[in-house]
Image 1 (cartoon, rainbow, N blue to C red):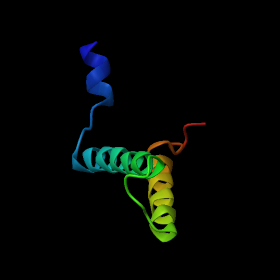
Image 2 (cartoon, one colour):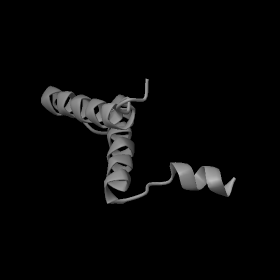
Image 3 (cartoon, rainbow, N blue to C red):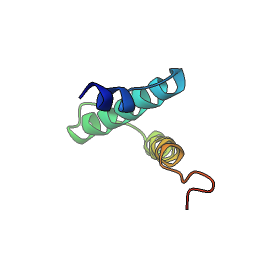
Length: 66
């Protein structure tokens, strides 16, 4: 169990920051869904782009990985 947690735990500042951003963006979307906050369309679009780029970075294919 410890090995599994160590594998998925953030290994450096960039990983931690990306995880923080992902959870923050999802929290903003949830708050907007419950109408706690009201985000302009431009901000919502920027959040979608940011979330997508982070996910693409972490799930990209490695070179030579088939």
